[in-house]
Image (cartoon, rainbow, N blue to C red; front, side):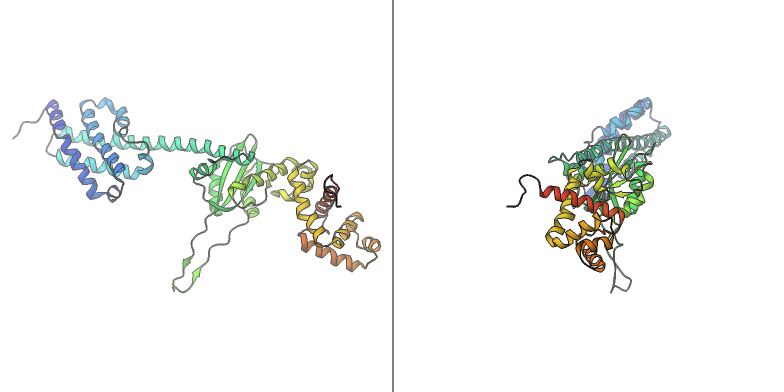
Length: 404
């Protein structure tokens, strides 16, 4: 019966076979882990370095078990930083398992203390790997939060640079097509993860900005699901209808604090989101002026208040979406609307002033609604229309705009 090796002899023997263990480990990785063989040569080499470092670190640890706190630095320090982004924690644990199996197979005839040391070391290295990935995830989360705040600030200020698209891509933005901005107050403790889950449930994506007591959401629709084939193969099941931004805002309303909640108008893409943000912020600033404003309220429903506060975008919207279209379509409709609003929305008084039948006034008002989309018979929409007429007529008489 062979005499058991002393610890010093075991250490010398382990150092002698360390190269052999490394070679056997790489061969086992190729044979048992498909993802390892599919890697580019550079990353495969980095994974191999980690495996070799693990074997070397085990020998050092066996010599002095008190070196446990340095395991992560010893093993993973040899790998490039991008390896953590390309190799998952599950794959790392598979790598550890294969390496430990190779070492166990080679030293199975060794002492009981050596086999116990391998088991203890494999546990420590697994915990160390989990700690490395947890720290990386925490750092990535903090970086993402800062980057997201920077992107939202750029959208709110409208100050874009060439790096904005790459920053948005780095955040994993899944939105496509149209975008709208929602502005409200914050709750005492904002759970941003819960907001994201609620948005994903509605097939939407959000960028979140918290600015003091103000919460800003940049909302985009996520990519629609691919239509699936029916069981008989002859029909397809269509995608679920996409929710409108107002419906999404209503669903997200509970995540905001008390007070007004304003939704900016829809814009074609994320790069144009500053226009929606500008409207939403202007609306949020004056929403208290509408006593019975709904929650959420559209920024375009606050056009009169925004215009009175000096918002040039609101003034331009009133002129370009109401006054100019009516003026270009028919001066008769424009005159009828003027008279109707000036006469307190009375059909009879308007008819007397225009020398027409009240039914004619009613017909013209319906045509006005068809042309511009606003109904003058409603109190709130009448205020919007009257404000548009006033601002539009003022713009007609501005210096440099007089007709020859």
